[in-house]
Each structure stands twice: as structure tokens, then as C-alpha cells.
Length: 300
Image 1: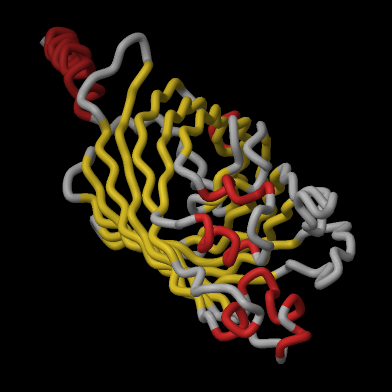
Image 2: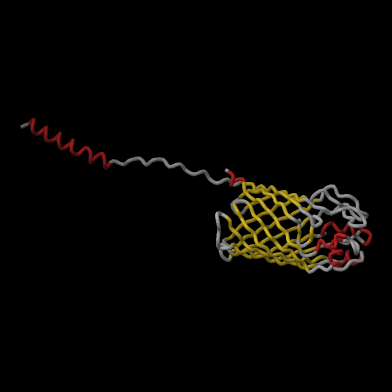
């Protein structure tokens, strides 16, 4: 009887063992935690274009040009701080009397600022310094360097449709106060404002997308120094409209640029005499550009 009782108890214990083990808590496997995104990144890229057109005025004597930029960025919790350098090929011929410009070796842009997004709204505030190295004396100046303070604002109406507004201000456009030294050294203070729009087209083919975009703006330029030097008010209206195709980091941009500048206004803006060969730099033109833009993080 005793042996039977012991055997029965053992059988109950053995039969209960699996159920007991199953009820015991099992330690969860450790899941690898993804590393936090870096607060540091670098944007960089380049461009080749049939004409370096800046706000409706050619900077490359209606010829081909190229450029590149390098922009370190630091995310700080309430936006991104950035500082960059960009360089473009320019052609301001010094030969006189056909041209008579200062013939710098390039345009080098040094810039920095802060940008952030607040829902559909984007804000970009900063300063850009335009440096023209190795300028030569043209009889009036050898210094065209100047800076602009800027504010760029965008609003995404939909993920594919956005509008924007830009404002740039400089106390002395192209350092014209030096050009106008003989007539009192009046500074050419200038404010440029524009409205922009962009619509990403609702189709892609083999990774190729497209968008249409445009800009309409006006450059208000203080004319005191220009008038004293015998020119008319150089202020003018500028616009562009274009179609662009995108593939990964590449953009092929086809764009028409136009202004309301007359030949006299163009001569005034460039501070050149009537008949100067640069008078066509302000004419309406069609520009083709191939751009490459990416981020260091995108290459990892």
C-alpha cells in the first residue's frame, strides 16, 4: 500500500511538471536599439548650365558655366544651423571699350543661417556674402563684393504643391559705392522680393519624376548714385518658369528667364555706357541646367 501511494504521488508530480514549466515566465530576447540619428550632416552638389543667370541677368557672358557647393548642417532641436560655400564660373570681360568689367576669376558665395519647419510652414533666415576674387581695376572699381540678409518662407498646401516668399536686402549692391566715388560714393541699397510656386507632377516612370515651378519678383534699387553718374533707375521686375525632371540625386531643369529691363535699364544696372557689348545680358533667355544634390547621410 505504501509503495502504491508513493508511486501515485510520483506520477502526479511527473505529470504536472510540464504544465508547471510552461507557466514559468520566459525572459524576452533583447532587441537591438537603433542608433539615434546623427545631428550632423553635409549637403553637397554641383551644376552645369548653359548660362549662369542671376535674377534675369547673365553672369557668364551668355556662355556655359558650372558650380558646386558644400554645406555642413547641425540639427539643434529647434531647427538646423548651416554654413556653406558655393562657387560659380563667371565671365565679366575686362576688355575695353567693348566691356570694361573687373574680370574676377569666379563668384564665391559664403553663407550661413538657420532653417526649420513648423508643420506645413518652412522658414530659412541667413546671410550670404558674394566674393569676387582677383578683380582687376576697370577705371572705376576693383571691388564688387557685397552681402545680403535673407528670409525665405515656404508653405506646403499639399505634399505636392507649395508656395513661397523670399526677401533679400543689401546696403550696397555690388559695392557700387566705390564705383560712384567720383559722384559722392552713394551706396546702392537694394531689396529683392519674390513669390514662388512649385507643383510636383503626379507621375513617375522608372524612377523619373517631374515638377513645374516659377518665380516672380522685383528688385528695388536705390537710384541716387546711378542718377548722379548719368544713369536711369535700374530697378526691375524678374520672372522665371520651368519644367524639371528628377532621377535620384539628379535634376534636369529647363527654364525661361525674363525681365522688364530695357537696354537703358540694363546699362544702368551694369553701370556701363550705351553700346556696351553686355547690353544683351539682361535679355530674356532659356537656360538648361543639370544639377546634382545629395546628403552625406544618403551615401551611408
